[in-house]
Image: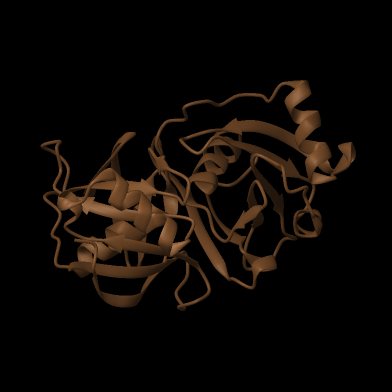
Length: 270
């Protein structure tokens, strides 16, 4: 039996964020066992905590979807950090350092929130015309509703579209065959959240997506289209209330939110 947590990420209230299954002490598990348990949980991601290989890291995490392993993902980073701290983990330095397949990721605690420093993009820049047309057709979005588009790939392979407003974002009904596409649009001034975000991957819409929000923040803050600090809402159409806090501090874009431990126990994987 291995220690187990289920964490709700990007919410201060259980059942309104994005759930993550976390298995501790997973160095005894094979790749096949990890993949099988991730398929069984049927969550967007399941993580497995192991001793670090890098001298600077506090722990190592492996991130699995129901279909395979990811080098990095946002809500698994925050949920894994919360579970590791809940289990008594103490960071070696000022920041918690997570080792994942894409490298080392810094995580900091700011009051009741955790935040990670956005990793460098694997691919950024403009989306070529053919790919953009394909995405717009899959989203059923009109040309005049699209303000801009960028590659926002920090592991999952996101293409991000900036739409004219949050209302347009919330009205989308994309085709099931769409790839990894994120959309963002501004709310009117004075709203609790500055932007509305949605993330689509095939037939599935993700409730709240840290990697996408981090890459969108790098794009919009980096180009002066968003302020240095803002809150994004995500999951509205899925009856969730995700809130993602994005902030530029120096050269870094920090992406964070609240996390809630929902389930604590043990799991029989041995």
